[in-house]
Structure formats: structure tokens, C-alpha cells
Image (cartoon, rainbow, N blue to C red; front, side):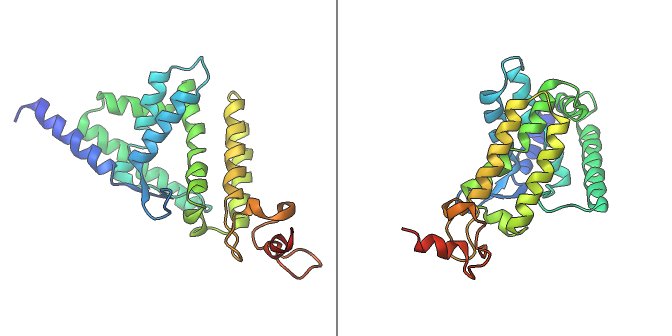
Length: 232
């Protein structure tokens, strides 16, 4: 087997393995797990379509394609529920070890390893845009499957609180992308509105007066979904 063919087989195996890395998010049916390949393609597609005009779209597509590739070794880590300091450090160690493994297998001068390194450096505006837009995508998938995956991890209040904390952090880190921050806020609000009520099963947006799903209205003794049902 020639070196070129051997390398092609290695990249093919890694690509197929990457497509089997499952995220905690789900497809629209709420059952089929989203894979890292699903996520990376979605990110590349949305980034190139929505990016500000001054950004290099081929570079955006490249960074979106490789941004999670170390997870082919490290696996995905869900971050919706708050990670402890130990869990965050463990995630960083696993991903650093994965990048080192890829460099040892492919060589540090490989195109893939170089692009991963450029993305991780977070110096180029395209890399920063992809990292910010990456935070929008889980909100889209949560909304598409009525927050099935999110409900298995957190409560509604925790879901909302996680969004508030993340948004506060990201507006500080990425002030150069105001339109994307607006998209992030809108995606958060929409996914929260799609969270189904524990009492009646309807989406939160269907409840009157913006009440939380199943929330007991102060002084009434009934949940907001019961008020919704009684409202003409």
C-alpha cells in the first residue's frame, strides 16, 4: 500500500468515526441523536449563509468543518448543565490530548492539524465568528424537537438561567458581532418558548401572559396552562 493510499484510509476511518460521535442534542423526532458530522455541516452551512460580508466564507466553512474534530478521539461533552471546575479541566485535557494524538498520527504539518490549531488560537475573525455561532445551533435543535434533550438534563428554570449566564459571557467576549449576538438572544428566547408545559404539554409560548410552563399563578392556586384552557 502506498503512503498516499494508507493516509487516505486513515482519514476515511477518522471521518466515519467522527460521524458516529453523538451529541446530547436530537433530531426533530426527539429520538435520533445529532452527530458531530450533522452539527459541523449545519454550522458550515449557516455560517456561510449568514456571515458578515467582510469575512472569508471558504475559511468559515473550513473552521466549521474542523472545529470539533478532536472529539473524534475525545468525544462530545454536554455543557448545558453547569460543569464543575474539575469537569471543565477534564474536558480541556481530553481535547488537548486528542489534538496531540491527531498530530502524532497525521503529522503536525498536516492541513487538518494546522486548521484545528488556527481555529483554537481564536485570533482570526472567522475563527471567532464560528465559535460564537456554534453557541446558537443547540438552541435551534432544542426548538426543533421541543427541548426533549434539554428536559433530560435540566429544569426549565435551569435552562433559562444557563441561557442568561451564557449570553452575559458572550456579549463580553464577542462585541464585534452584534448581529450574531441578536441571533443568539432570539434563538434562546425561541427555544425557551418551545419548552413544553409539564401539565398540558403545550409549548410555553401558548400560555397566557408569558407564564412559565406549568407555573402556578400567584394567588390563583392553578397553573398557567389551566388559565390558558379557560381563556376564550
